[in-house]
Image (cartoon, rainbow, N blue to C red; front, side, top):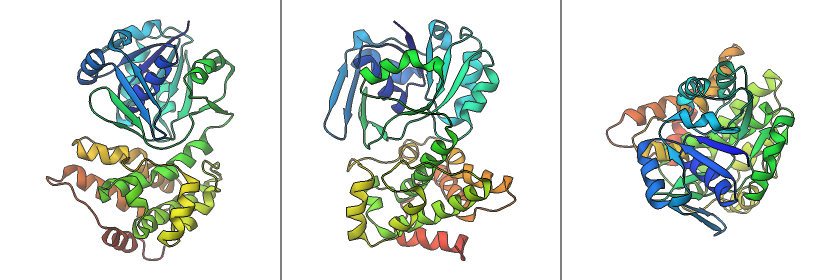
Amino acid sequence: MAKIFIYGAGSIGCYVGGRLLAGGSDVSFIGRARVADQLRNQGITLSRHDDSRWHVPPERIDVSTEAAGAAAADLVLVTVKSAATPTAAAELANVLRPGTIVVSFQNGIGNADVLRAALPQHTVLEGMVPFNVVERGPGGFHQGSAGKLEIRHTPAMQPFVDDFRKAGLPLIQHADMLPVQWAKLLLNLNNAINALANRPLKEELSQRAYRLCLAMAQKEALALLQRAGIRPVKVTPLPTSWIPRVLSVPDALFERLGRAMLTIDPLARSSMSDDLAMGRATEIDWINGEVVRLAQRLGQTAPVNARLCELVREAERADVRPSWSGKALLAEMRAAAPHA
């Protein structure tokens, strides 16, 4: 049986790894001491927005705080926050056997490139986790929105496809992941808005003012992607370019359209909102910051996304977490880009 390691036992790592374990795969986790202790004591309890549940007892959990065990890995799923990617790359370079498959299931665009540069003797693949996962108590992880795992296609990955199928996490494979990554990032531009609103995702998206902020951020990014010759794939029932228009419709109409676009648990919040709640650094530089960097490479500006980056960084430093109203945040976006 193939040996799978999860490097980064956070919400995404524990959920995906836990589902693989529940499906019968041989999975080990590498994570921080807090989570390692919880998994050893509580096991892993998983739930999903459709009321599905799984539990893996503590005696089946193999978890370590050190990367050395990954020397036995056939497949490594990297699920750490983007800021930790260089550290992950350096640690894995010291222990992995040549030929080990490494998948970046992380936010942002360039994490696989960072891993690939440090792991030249390994196959490194871009992956994408489209759904939201929240931690609900020790060892408890909940999938709060719908979606399927996506990954760059390569023959080397095929021996592991059945593990994901048995876990109920079938892989959608693509020859080119860049349009997929950008499609997800366009949706993730809402993470900053949700974090600043300090409300559950469903409640935030039910208010047109917040949606107009997201529409502005997406339109700005879409214009830059068109200039760069990148065409994001369709990851919802609607074409990506239509989404800003749909976000702008009245609340009652959006409620009907939104149900068709995406299933969201009423209590789910973005990972960025959870980071602010826990006093942790966010991934703003690898989400909205990616749009700002794309603009810079093209000799353009991205004032809406740049202002969202500034506001989230201010929130990271604040003694009291802000809770922006939709009206106030929209006024801030319009002031940043008055002609948008």
